[in-house]
Amino acid sequence: MQVKFGKIQRPRKIVVDEATMSLNFARFVAEPFERVIGHSIGNALRRILLSSLEAPGIISIRIEGVPHEFMSVEGIAEDVTNIILNVKNAKLRCLPSDEAGIQRESRIVSTVLDITQDMIDKSSGQYDVTLGDLIKNTFFEVVNPDLHIFSVTKPCKRQIDFRIGFGRGYVPSERHVIPSKLVDEIVLDTAFSPVVMVNYFVENTRVGQDTDFDRLVLEVTTDGRLTPIEALSFAAQVAQANFEVFTTVKAPTLTFANDAADGRSAEDELIDKLCLRIDEIELSVRSTNCLASANIDTIAELVCIPERKMLDFRNFGKKSLNEIKAKLHEMGLELGMDLSALGISTDNVKDRIVELHEGRKAKREMRDKK
Image (cartoon, rainbow, N blue to C red):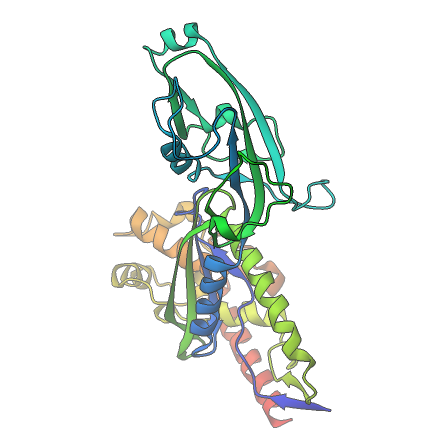
């Protein structure tokens, strides 16, 4: 049995703000959602991003000749406690997969550190050992290779072993399960979470004449072990995996009177966007006035104009141009679009868009009668 629900607004795609995107930060925009749904999804994704993503981390360290952490080491400026504090800031990247032959089991990465007097002399009497010196040529990519670990003041040759594993969130040392742990292996507290900060905002957005739908804006900052796009994708998949069990509850299946079920095609969606008036897309007063003075009334008339010609309009500057481009990008449109498939050209755009609008209106009325 199927129960038919009313039409529900759902985002067709997610937009990444390219202007602010970096290796560790990205802003995502998804719209439109029904009211309240934006907050529900935004909060759920935020909590999953901060708590449930996996990344590699150092879970123990072994330094040759060092039996425990409460001691100093001859020839090294820092004591072992400070060395461990520095190691806790290590960021390693690895996406384990069966295809790549990389499994989730912990593995030991060993390095023989050999510091000579010549190296110390060239470093003004103190050689700085970095994370990149200790972890190299392994399955793991070092995100912060310049991280200072300790300083060597006398020639020394020691083997240093790191045990690297995968986990979620913050795991204290006593909760690590290490098979065949060595006597002089120092177990660490480990922060596995690759996401540093997540902000989400819900704003009003317009669908046709209604302005009370939700626009969800997510800002994701990572520490480099995952990219923001990877983090959001993984969080969405974790959420989906946990929701699946609830779909097994025995109850009638819902169908929605949504766009696809009502025979609404991609062309219909495009026509609806093109028929919108300029004052319906929430541009600044300056940009709206500039377009009005240029006798541009609808989105169709706007997107027919090549970008290079926009600056020819009176009182129209680059700031207004960038604002319009950003707004069109959110709508999946751009300046200088080829609308010949809809029979639209720069010469007939005003008349043709009225025809298309009337045709869409008649089509909706017929559908409603059914």
